[in-house]
Length: 312
Ligand code: NCD
Image 1 (cartoon, rainbow, N blue to C red):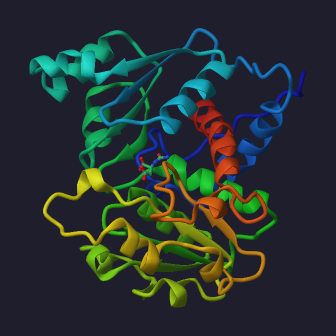
Image 2 (spheres, rainbow, N blue to C red; image 1 turned 120 degrees about the vertical axis):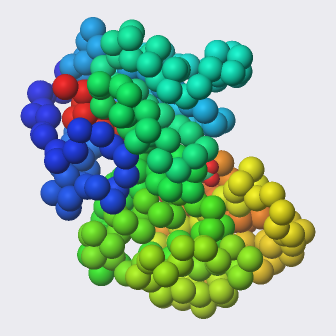
């Protein structure tokens, strides 16, 4: 059995976004994640400090890794966890978001994890509930636990966030992952580049203090970290996209293009991956270059850290 750890306090009741966190908050979460990463490699992974607590995963958008990651995290901490399936819920019968939130609130959960397609949905829901909420990805706004697990993965690979160059590449326009990573990396003093084809230029680009590139080769040159993004097809309605083949040719990451980055550059992708569209198949699985599976493992530890800090 692993030793006991002190659970720190952070400045926020809710985890709406990285934007609200201080550097100190981020460091506390990342440090506690280290403890849970070790815990999760033990045979007995139970660390039941949330025994008797109820956590609801309220997911209005499809999810595999984030939902399972939050569920495993809650279970390893000993909480009772309920996954609310929107397809089978009263929202399908026309119930409003407010009424669903009120109903869930009446069941006294200790924390609600929310994924939603609309920016600021978690703020709206948190105004109705009396317990803390964690944003598990909303609209194109933020996905804070993804940025925390990405930062943790970078640090865990012996990189110091300060002064490294991180190229965030692909569908910048629709990516909440990119936005949360931007806020986190800037707070930690990394150099951030946005690398996107012209048709994925973010509409709110003037909000970000970044170097921009519309050519992948140039954008990843000498980068320490190459973070690829998924094309958010579900958020693209009227835009004419090139064929998968031509996207891959111009904007897909290949071994050949990766040679332009630092020799020891790490490749990240939040998943799910469109293989041979965003990234060359074999490169995604190459554990000497890609840390995609480590991101998934670290996600559980980071979410255990967030849950144990947020549940009061
Ligand atoms: C991300 C999301 O949902 O925003 N996925 C995830 O949480 N692992 C990225 C994506 O879907 O492209």
